[in-house]
Length: 201
Image (cartoon, rainbow, N blue to C red; front, side):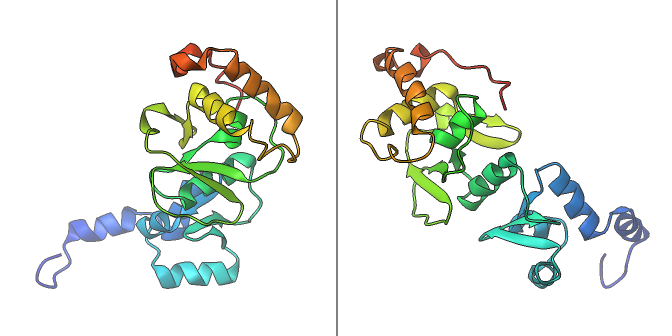
């Protein structure tokens, strides 16, 4: 469009594009039903359109800037994805949540662990950790950033001995990865730990 004149190519492009709600539905289907406000805007919804869909029940707010599409019932993977999105672009699923991803044990419905490089986050249902030496230990599973198996075990070994998780459900299961990490000569770094089956999740 130039000088107020609509070019034929612009009209065809607009006609070929699916409507915003269809674009949102396709995006959500590929992402466990979870989308960010930035993704909604990319699909063509402005803030007023987003607010209207929240009122009408088409979008369900999970965290600030993170929504479930259609209904609030999410799979565990969807919940993990939403927590990572809520913590920012460089956030990584970690600790007990990452251990579920790598198949160390079953989820016990506790807080979702996410690690960030810096900043302050106070998000209900999410336990936020901070690390400035994380990027080399990041993997991606189903589009979700997650700590590597070796880093996950080292993170658990660092927090379990001080008793912060001793009273939580599943603590008995959680002691096994800690023993595994300690028995794997952690002083030699992450490469000393054998990775579990990465097809467990």
